Length: 169
Image (cartoon, helix red, strand yellow):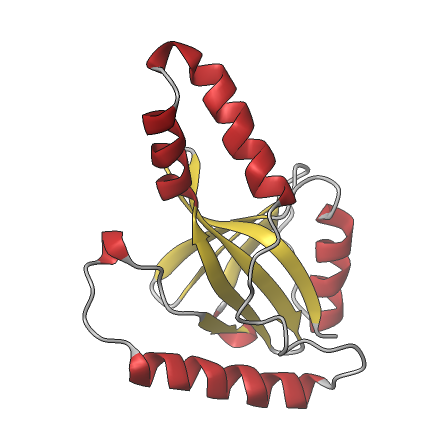
């Protein structure tokens, strides 16, 4: 701990994830640091390539999302050997700084602020066989996708965190 999943997708609308970033699991909390607007990437790719090439656009966007190394806001927060307490302290301070600096921007023109979700606020935790993590917390439904290859690692991190998956996951 902490366990970081880079390039995790978040906030699913109509079957498509809207943001990509770092999902970080520590004892007692889950953090998400958004880094890229995936819908903006898809829209930009669609503008550049003719409409008839929809499959090619989808493939290019998918591959760019998989190989892109984000200039992560959490990269220096999750150093090897760091304790959960130190990570939480640094991450909570970073989130506080970003909240204080943020000025009003229309939602569609900015990334959401990083978030911290306490374990005691999480209910209905499910992890699909394809690596989709879903739960309710903070008066909202949360959907993340880490993918099939990282599913077991996420399951183990959630177990180590003390969270129990529902039987449907």
